[in-house]
Amino acid sequence: MAVWIVIGASRGIGLEWVRQLLARGDQVYATVRDPAKASQLWILAGSAPRANCQLLLCDVSSEASIISFAQEIAAIRNLDRIDHVVINAGILDYPNRATELSFEDFSKHLRTNAVGPIITAQKLLQTRIPIRSITFMSSDSGSATDFRAFEDGFAAYAASKAALNQMLRHMAAELQRIKVYTTILAMHPGEVTTDMANISVGWEVDGIISAEQSVAGMLRVVESKTVQDTGTFWTWQGARHPW
Image 1 (cartoon, rainbow, N blue to C red):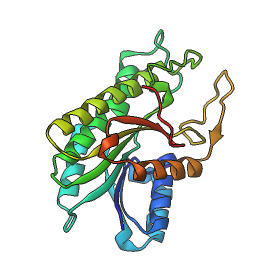
Image 2: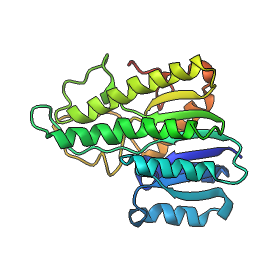
Image 3: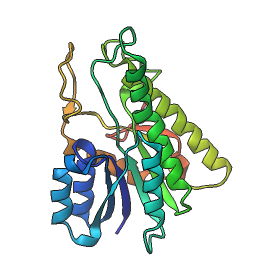
Image 4: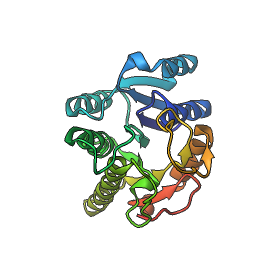
């Protein structure tokens, strides 16, 4: 039985991670920002054996919440390893154009999509519980090489994912230098039909997939990677994605 932490599990991709992991019989620690808005996760957790799913609070936009969450993880009795962490929490307030958005709107995207996920990983690493891998949910929008100029209204979101990508690469390199063998990965989940993606855009979106398809693919990718792959960027289909 593998031990997983899923950050941001109340809906969409995060909820589907929990669903598939519990179906395999794995142990899952799933986090939510607001328990009142996590009814589907409560139902899912309640249908699993009690020992297989534990719900915890973690708001990645709040340093105090992240620290409290990491302390809870560190205090769990007999938790001597964490196989995989999936940091899925994020926001997309559409549109977020560079020529229009406010200081606060830009800051909110950066805080939730880049700063919070990195600090969450940092605090989990500081618990000293061995962690095999940490996967950050990135996006093709955050690729600097494959710039998507047609994505009108995604400027702050794309910038936040690009910042996340650079930070996780530095995290991977720093861990290698101090011989901490946690595999750090960036993942593009595909064009997934979720509540967050339920927006009207002015272009054709190719290759739309379900959360079930996306997570099934990402699960195979995450479990296939070793520390030799740390600091790399992958698609849900197992292809390398350009930074």
